[in-house]
Image (cartoon, rainbow, N blue to C red; front, side, top):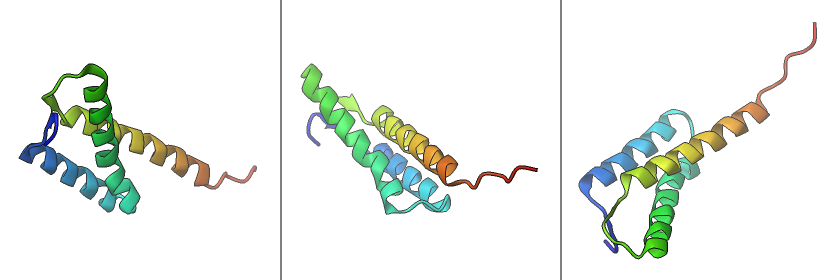
Length: 85
C-alpha cells in the first residue's frame, strides 16, 4: 500500500490499540486516532526522505503514545480537586 508496508501484523496492532481504548472507556476518536496519526506520520516520513518500505508499527506506537498523553491530561483536568481539610 503506497510507499510503506501494510501487513497483517500492522492491522492486528491497530485492532489491539482500538480494543485497548474501548476497554478503557474511550470513544471512537480515541480508538481511531492512533491509526490516523500513525499513517500521517508514516506518510510525512516518506515524503520527507523519499525512501519507501517504512514499517508502520513504530508510527502506530507513536500515535498510541500521543493519544495516551492527551487522555491522561484530559483525565487530570477533569478530576475533581479534593476539598481542603
